[in-house]
Length: 464
Image (cartoon, rainbow, N blue to C red):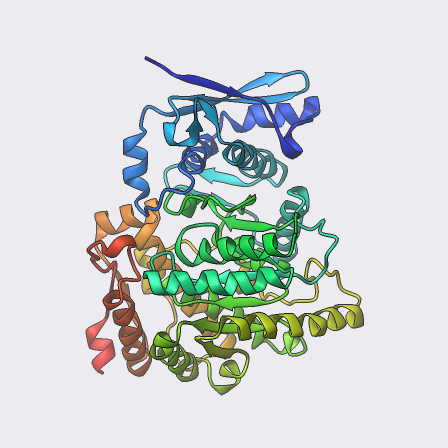
């Protein structure tokens, strides 16, 4: 028996012109529609902690979604949706809102910016020139009303692993609580683990301070949302076209960044930001950056710090501070730093809520598609400009993330085996040690699931 649920439009999609509805109808006939369907399925599984997109799609293979055109807007029709998204037969309000956020970002905005979806690869191909990429990021944030805050300099971006032990999760909540007590808001990648904990803690801090407009912004992208469905705290959801625009959105909207323990995805994010800050054009930028975790994770941060020092140098190490076991100190440091951020924005005449003056080289904006050829071709040598090395290390870790949790990456590994990584002997040894520590600590898969590496370090190169 088919179960069909029809949803009225909400948010920015509640009033559309005839031309806009025509754009939507054209979108639903393109390859992007299958990815739209998969993203809707992920949203309907909000709060379900899993990182196997293939299993999710198989479980609900009879699920479908259609658009019903009406004079005042467009309705979404859900066919055989997951029942965990309903309470007494009624769709949860937050899930309802997120479904129309998917519609906004996946179909409407992609049509507006001429993005092309590749359903076979579960990804989007978008224009790559720097000015266009930044415009797309800004326009999507603006259209989702993420830039309309009346409280400037209060968005703290939190990065960290989706697969973390209970002790670390509790610490992320404690830090989020301290951030919330100081009236600041939270932005994460919207999934479980270190993406959920800070939001949950901040919600309690906001409640105690009677902050009724707390923002819990989740920024994701199509190829990862099914592997990391939005957690239940997210009240603003934005789906960027690709990982590069997701990363750019994080750094341009942030007034401070906190990095919790994590795996390759967290290392990718950290390397991305450090690569930007090492650019001479960004030498005056004010972006508070704190690496933090429980006191028992001191060794984890020492390993990360050693890797950064060995690859990007002491200058990169000077761009962050490490605080362990003191959530209150993290909150205070971020609060104090906000005045520096505001003063810098005032001095250069920049927007309080979108960091236009941050220079992002085109190499950091171009979409990197991890294949066996592109991963093997990465320049992982120390004899190159530091910013270029950071960009290539970021791409390398991005490819490993794809091989771990993204549907297209997993399929690539199934068909052709692990990615091969080549580079300088000393660099490859350090990378091997770091990645092995992530595997040993269970940071690659949720709930301690067995992990089969999706990569191999080229032994001959590493021993030469």
